[in-house]
Length: 224
Image (spheres, rainbow, N blue to C red):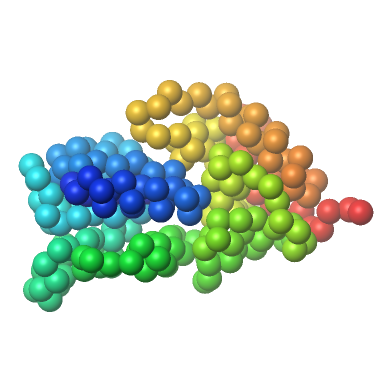
């Protein structure tokens, strides 16, 4: 999944980016409210971790502007103050959940997984499509109980296809979820990643819809 972190404290921001990235997500970050608001306005994210005490533009204002503009991605707010009034104001502004600093990274990741599950039919951290299983908590994939050795890009690609299984996803959409905002995106490389991933999955798992993109299908168990 593609996650935006908006946090001005450098050490915490780096910890969040590393932890969320290690969980198998593509992570963007901003250190102030103006940049955070811009990224959330022009880019598509599956979820946002948003600090309220931001320089240049506070987090509540950022959140209110996103919601007023119709941006509906789940938002987990962070606050150093812990006053119940601030939490209520944040939820009323459109936040989906909150954490009070200091917090454990494991709790933040668990809350983030819960927010992402709301976007899908998945009710737990383990997702299934036929013989393919994805453990989003451990960031690992299995086929018929056997672990798959995947690169980070292959895992991210499989996670997005499983999150939206049955839907046709274009190469552009897939590349936007795999690459950072400021990196050079080449949708043609998606064909390479799809080809590599296909070799590791049961035959027929990834279907090509000519002229449109790819989708994940329940191909059943692989033949012996």
